[in-house]
Image 1 (tube, rainbow, N blue to C red):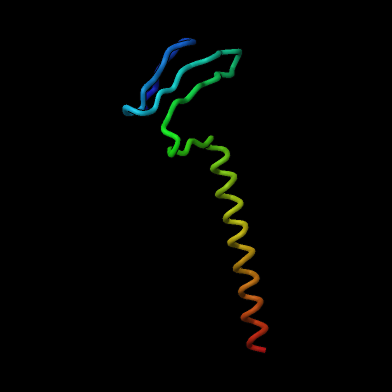
Image 2: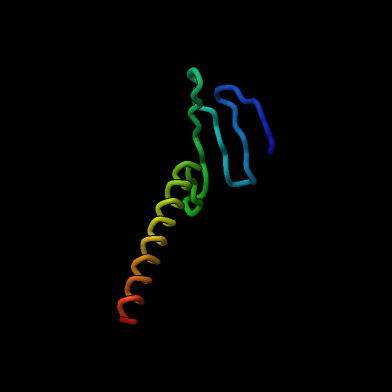
Length: 75
């Protein structure tokens, strides 16, 4: 992991197409601005974790339903 210190207004470049700028620092919060190509997905990690959890729950529910259908078919 690369660890950098940045001040308000300073930028980081990720590759040649992604620019991250520190917009504001207030207490323990940092506001970032990100410029990237429109086709590039940018997600907060906690949102991605939530989506993955919801997908796992949906899969578990589907498996239970499938197993119930199979059980009923057998009699």
